[in-house]
Length: 624
Ligand code: ADP
Ligand code: MG
Image (cartoon, rainbow, N blue to C red; front, side, top):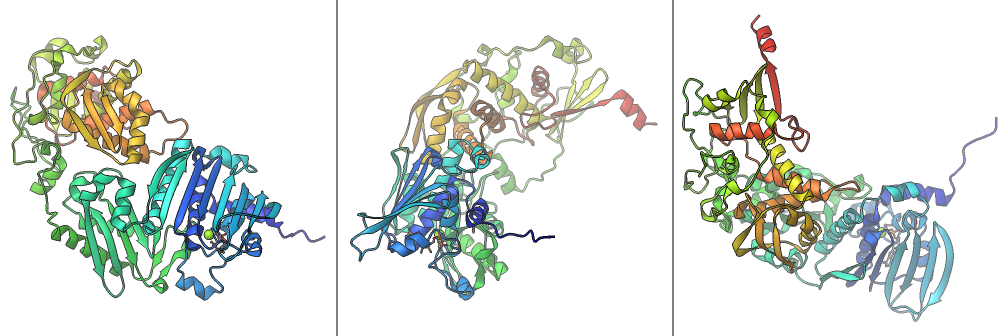
């Protein structure tokens, strides 16, 4: 038999390697920006068309390449950055594999223009799918311009797997942020479809953060500085009261390289312990400097994870440095938040050390009409006044908001004006109508479940999930038929967001308006709101929008993502009564009725079980 093993042709090998290096347009952005930095550029310009699907171009004023180097730079394992394996352990450049340009050129149309400072003329090379189409002498400024067009043109499967432009652009912006944050002394600009989206002049670290994330960021930054033998830390953490739900502003840089580390993230979280509201994420922008000999950045091809020799020590130093800063800057628990403190329920729970499992004192099956103890929603020293639950009416809807209503922002909406259909068949679900009227048919268990009797036995309903379902269907209906009812605000509500978040809000604006939001303006990091949906307390608005932004960002919306659906889910999640909230009998009954008026009562909007049944038969069996 003849031999069958062959060496793969270079262009095939490159295409295979490209799969590792280039996952999406953002990977190209990262590689090109890093090359520009390694070339000692002082000004770097990033140009994007169609979220990088049509064009990614990076122009730098760095040291450029000679004609020979220009040609060599597209060969695999061609690098000027290391010469031997030893160099790997004293890296001070971003690149070292010599793979990026070869990989990119294998799967795109690439045009390079480059000139060194001491040369009159420069070089241009055009390569398409590893094939050199031309190499010429040209007149071009000192530095390098590399444009990458038609990414994945020869791998249609890859191209088809790219997500929507919104998602791909997000990834690009993330990379841009990381690189720009790691190098504040370099000027960066970014253009997307002809519009300048970022212009970051050379500056100090603080200014760089503010230029990226918005002027309002300035007041929330707390400096962290620490120098020990093994680790130097410098940078900022966000004050706890500004913490948002999104993890967008969490950055570790190790020796100027962005890294992800769940372990070090944990160190920060533990330094913030007790200071954050439920679900809020600390923001941090921290530069760690360690001896390059003590890290191995080679363990991951895209190089965002690194291995430290002594993680435990780093953890301890980091944690104590952050704690120290938070303490020094008087960031002890602050309760005078700008917004209504009544909203910070989970936080106050923590502060008071309230046990997480609690017996509901209002639960007394032998007694009728026990006034339930209110255990909810008061964080600023019990200033919560008794809720204005209307005893009359089938429109006891507002009762479900008791925990959310806040004194200061009590609206004057007449809830009886809002009509909610109650579906006839729901009534027959219960033994008989009269009984519902006369007798307590629901009980609350642990401020979490509602127990209700049905003909065949009993129901156990998860109050939080059930309410999410109810609200979700309401919002969906409002959005689809654009019937959301607004309540006008006396004074416009002004909220601040980063430009990126503003862009998202703009995208969702129309849907938000159909739920009842009225925007006066959305610009310059500021949103002015003059109307909110009926039933949405003003003080909840910022939480709703934050939750929404974080949901859009985290749920990685792809092509079949529906903004409407996400919005409805997100708002339902924000506004639904929480576990731990005690409800009056009427509220419980109303929730049960509303749930079974829903189209899909059995599951929450995120497909979790809302209730379980236990039939008399099943119970009988248990007593056998
Ligand atoms: P690596 O960065 O790992 O060395 P690359 O494939 O990204 O590998 O680049 C190959 C080589 O091309 C680099 O080592 C560098 O010498 C040269 N190069 C790439 N981009 C630039 C640039 N913008 N300016 C100057 N030289 C560059
Ligand atoms: Mg490189």
